[in-house]
Image (cartoon, rainbow, N blue to C red; front, side, top):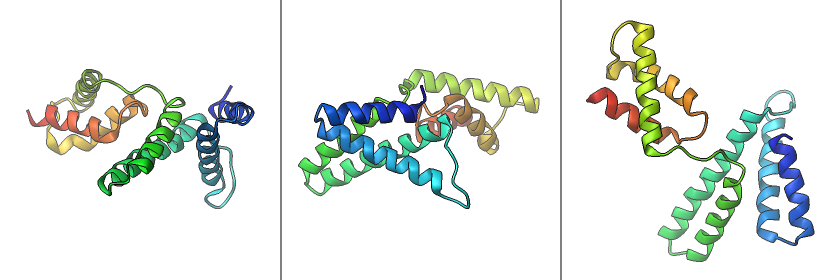
Length: 155
């Protein structure tokens, strides 16, 4: 079963169970997916990685909104945003630990070194990031991967 079908099934269950938070969050996620599908010149069906990227983007929006509401002293709205992010997190792959991100950065550097024939330096960060981001597969934020790669390349 695809992620989109899973969302639809869970939406039906949330409606039947009268779970307002889950219902509204899944509706928002499905709406974002549909918007992404119809964006551009022609409508198309998103594949699983694209649906995952949409859900990741929506979860990141919720986290950023929660921080903004906290900074503005709006704790009730921040807690609502965090609850929505938790609902979306059910559909996202588990995040990599810091040790796993560090290991991933090491592997990416080794791969680029093998391809280039020399140990990469800070100028090859783009190449290393490309390999590391592909290996992370959405299981780590880009900023965490970039920090690990930068730390390894600079010393």
